[in-house]
Length: 230
Ligand code: URA
Image 1 (tube, rainbow, N blue to C red):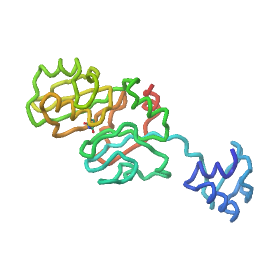
Image 2: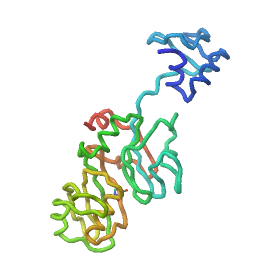
Image 3: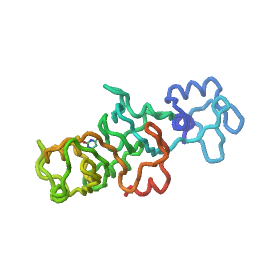
């Protein structure tokens, strides 16, 4: 890899600022100053910028426990973006794999890998998302069958795909869906004349929200978690 590209892929430098750093003599290869941006970096080379050892950042996979009043857009709008909760280099390279509403808490997956996130968000992949929800009005057993059969949402063609509703109490349930339509869970409860008052995502596919993470905290995914998305 060219040295200027190597600097870009291991720091927040742009190609232009990497070239300037090279020109200033801030970059060394195995202890020697290198100014040639086309210099070919190999595994044998130890590259330092102002004395700091550089390594390629590579793809990143993150789980975050989203608090309320944050949004899953990459830019701040009415509320701050969840990306601002991550103290990482080059946050602009990250995107969110499946959004939650501002008032929803729980598991958000964030990555630099578009192919990986597509496997989570594409309806064809039928990746299950499990939610814990509370409602304004009581829930009844007959809803379980209705959610399995599918519901007609406002302004949608056809029924929702089979969803698994598990009643936990008069006003509390777990719901697993494999689609990700806009406000889907809230609209499914609205379709049966109820209203969601609290919503929390517990899992996406085989990835469970880490119970150690407080609201607003995050960690990198393990290799097993990354590979579980197929
Ligand atoms: N469905 C909703 O209605 N809201 C969310 O945040 C996630 C799923």
